[in-house]
Length: 165
Image 1 (spheres, rainbow, N blue to C red):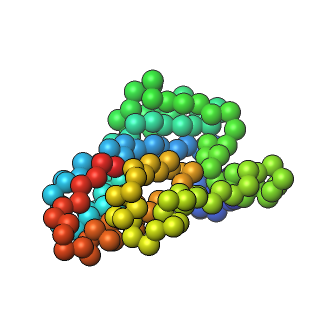
Image 2 (image 1 turned 135 degrees about the horizontal axis):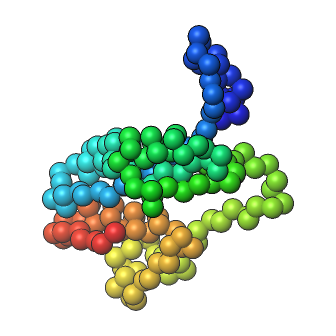
């Protein structure tokens, strides 16, 4: 954004820039996937592609953005003034934090654990027959869930796989 501010006159040659203000629009990501869908990956890809066209639900602008500008944006995105948030600082902190090079101020990376009962067993079904298994995400790995689905898909005795996400 600093580069755009610096070169805004280059972006609009022959025009006089009277201001440059950051804004960010948050859109609704409410997905309605049919549970009987044949190709889940294809359906999710379609939902992800349409996400940028979803209904706007929030507008963030810099604190110094003039009322005329944010009123225009509210109108363009069909938002009410209650959905406007004036930000005193960078509009997108995620981008700022992604470039933060102070490792001593960051948490150590976390590697999710595999439960002991699953480390000992080669087959997840046999481990489940011995005892119930509760996985606590993100502290424990999601790999056992993937392994369960893989084993279930390959097992001719399994008629259906049902889960709640």
